[in-house]
Image 1 (cartoon, helix red, strand yellow):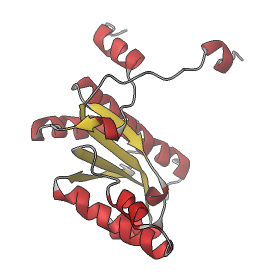
Image 2 (image 1 turned 180 degrees about the vertical axis):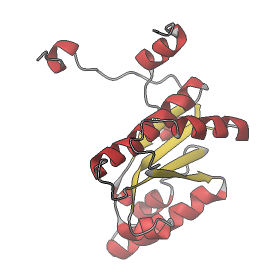
Image 3 (image 1 turned 135 degrees about the horizontal axis):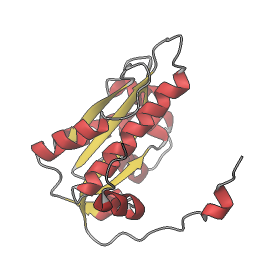
Length: 192
């Protein structure tokens, strides 16, 4: 039996757009809203029920502590970098009041390839973005060099077999977000 369409959900999905972290401010989600966001983030396709992802919450001072990890690794690997560049790295997670790290890992499974498990983590990140947007916040899913640097990942507490699918920055938009050009369906859709 076909379920009744949810017009508000369709409109949200048709109009969702990313908000740059530098265009966000507080307040961020309340504890109850954060629980809702994370619950929706965990409600994604997950073949084999493997739960191949987890979340790290960066809010308050944790954003600065994570920035210290990023800045130290950057300074060590770029010894000639100007102090301003190191400071930029230190502030990577401080624009939005809340950042959620989506951690991805794979488990050996005879029917669920690693790629499928990684896609589940990506779906989780997108659900987090959509849930935050539905609650009226701005959200942006980003990576950056530090999301792929093993020394940074170790410093943030990831296990050796874990990767970062990305950081989802969430906050109150300071201005309306402009949409970007979207592909025409005629350019991306074929029929077999």
